[in-house]
Image (cartoon, rainbow, N blue to C red; front, side, top):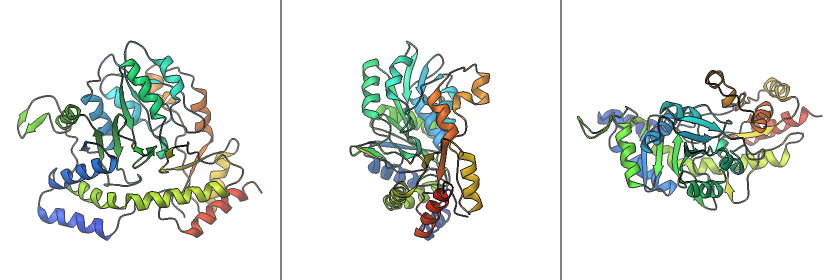
Length: 356
């Protein structure tokens, strides 16, 4: 079976883990600090604050920005639920705006109509590694005095006109095993704001700068030394991984038939966390057809956030037709760096044979 994703860990990662174990320093320390500095430099950000997951990175960013009860956060319904839940964690209300049919990202031209006196932030998600229209979003935020928190959990290294995502607003990244690079589990917050970085560091470590001296309410959102050691090795491989993902995506786009292939907007550098096609009719039958031929697929996501049971119970009755339509049609194909040429040819043959 060709897997939909696979973590690529080798001898260097194993050696890095063993060195941490031998050091006896397992909790947050020098490895975490080194990883933060390296990731900040990679993104072109002044600060990076490592956390225990992408979800806690989002939670940390919300708290660091002072978002709380009564505030509203505008975001997309087409994402993993953690994006919206981060607003709920701090007592704020997620407000959903429909998506662009080509990019699957939040439609920036619908954002302004959703702004109310309670709106505190915009939370765009660079879904599947495809950058949002950050120029338009940042312009809207500036005119209305709003915070921008970028959910870049699937977008390590994605960029717009050379500027990396996670540096337009406050960035949040995930290092879950299926992401473009992994620390087994982990996350990070990026920012150019000194005060925001300071607040984020307080949030992630029980509100303390100095051990046992607590200034504010904080949490245990820390990254371990083992995670950071893996991350440092993985970060050194990210450019190579991205080159492979982009090459695989281009190969699929050129050869697939009978489906809507993945889209990259002009000026954007898509990093293809997922290669997602649209199948207007027979999506599930195509997935079954591919499975029978030893090709794994994924549906990201089968149900938009506003239609999830949790949000229905919270009283959400939104009609967001584009997101709802896309959820019925999307199918992700393998695009990860471990694919061989014969795997790519098998995927193309598998998809195209469905229509012949």
